[in-house]
Length: 292
Ligand SMILES: C[S@@+](CC[C@H](N)C(=O)[O-])C[C@H]1O[C@@H](n2cnc3c(N)ncnc32)[C@H](O)[C@@H]1O
Image (cartoon, rainbow, N blue to C red; front, side, top):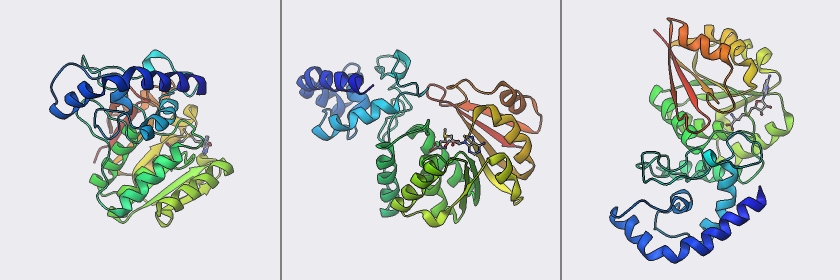
């Protein structure tokens, strides 16, 4: 994996940098043919060239493209060109461009800047099928637009999805209640929340989320399911009663790894639920409304 990254970064150094002036022209004018897919994936400041910092960051971003976390990168996980409708490969790092029109998230204030920096830093450490930038920013958008006060997350891991939620929660005045059974990952998450300055917005509970999450019966605005995949249907049964009408159940990994068919069946056949599947060229998110 690291060797793959080195080979591709070397490729960038030798093949992409000489094209700098024409690429810059394309980036600035928005005219010309399709952009080099490596530039699209790694040129995070969109100046049409890869700086030394961007080249250094490319290895991390390549690792993040390993959507099924098997330690290898296959063609569908690698950057594609925008000659057609496909757009840049999605599911990559904090500065990933999600499609042809999106730009990396821009901080509104120092608080957001600090959280985005903490996400970038967290991505440099061990990762465990954490959400992509495209997933994370959608989580934040949904949470903030819903005015979410109480978000329950199953699967804290190292806290990356929690950091995205916290960007919304510092505006809505809400809290993230997140559950994980792995003390090592929880310790890293705590550190990441502290680095981001959002530790007061997050309540972490250690243990089996099937046991710990249903203990609190307060109404849930957003239930985010991202723990063990075979448990998704059980989580829905255990926690749907506490999701408020008009609230959302969001499930990660609706595409990769293969989703739990019992969960998909439940969220697509119940008349009191309405589901959409989005960002399916990454890990995939299921967004389910509990109807009022
Ligand atoms: C895919 S990771 C979560 C990623 C995280 N949401 C993010 O995007 O940053 C899944 C996590 O679920 C946790 N997990 C697995 N089974 C669990 C269970 N029964 N109860 C609580 N946590 C569980 C694992 O320890 C792991 O950290």
